[in-house]
Length: 259
Image (cartoon, rainbow, N blue to C red):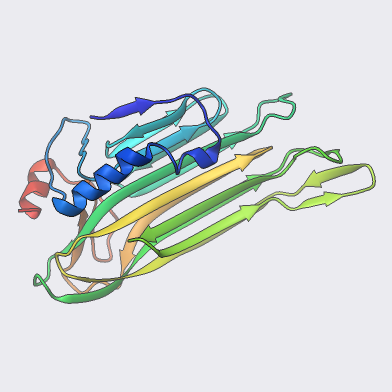
């Protein structure tokens, strides 16, 4: 199991965390197809990709190859579970925090393939992430103070095939003060995937929330448009049978699937 910790950095630093290591892992997975090598009972697999969770106030960024990871503190939390295909972030600014802003973020990746049909059969189907975003700005403040918050989510297949959503609290100002309004969004992010049965494809998941006040985001992965008998499995252990919810698998069963 690989795990590194760093001191808190701005939320945009999550996407730039350890670029050389991320590049090395990506290059290695292109040369050697991901396998289900058992590292330990925490289901860590360095061939599946490097993931990170970010909690703003004291934890900072935790980078890991685990199938699931989380960080949590009094005012922020972030988690991913690639076996379940579930992701979540949340933050709020401390009471009396002055100009302090908060943030939380997740950046995760996994490699998938379709099984259950003849290998090499051409397929066109959808990877979907059901997203819920919430943002609540800080109470009314004098003009010039930052009071807005935001939340965002992105599902990306390959290098550029992506779907994203974001929200930011509207701000209404009078002659003396500005007030942030709550906002929310429920949306399914969807990318079309064109692959042969058995061929690997990569999905990346990014959720983030930041600002003043509070914000939350969550996402749940599933697939649609697969033929009868087909199911999706991943390097980290995700499995979805067509028209059923995602469920975890034992390492023994998954190793049989990937032989």
